[in-house]
Image (tube, rainbow, N blue to C red):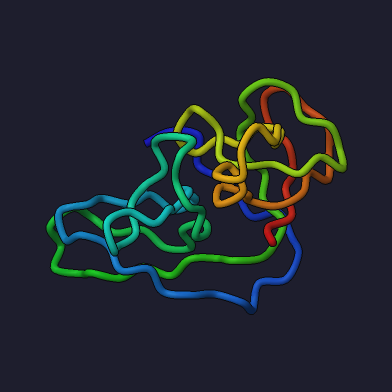
Length: 128
């Protein structure tokens, strides 16, 4: 993958486990979403955000779970422009976020958190 998020601070105690398909390779910092009952790597805007991968796994390594962060501050890539204070959701590009534009309530499932900085390539986001 590319554009993985990097933890830059904030709380790090609240972590969850995501079940992944054995054949799936996951890089640290990948945005993980819900897909067909298991975790998958973010690839489109119409997904439900779960968290950010805290550890990786190799494809077909026999492991089915990874640790994901569900809160904390992360430097993450941006689609478009995000201003500090904006609520951000899953972007149109894998592992990126964008400003939440409410055009339908369906977009709310992709909310990632709130931007702490302003940027057009990367911003710091506090996960909710």
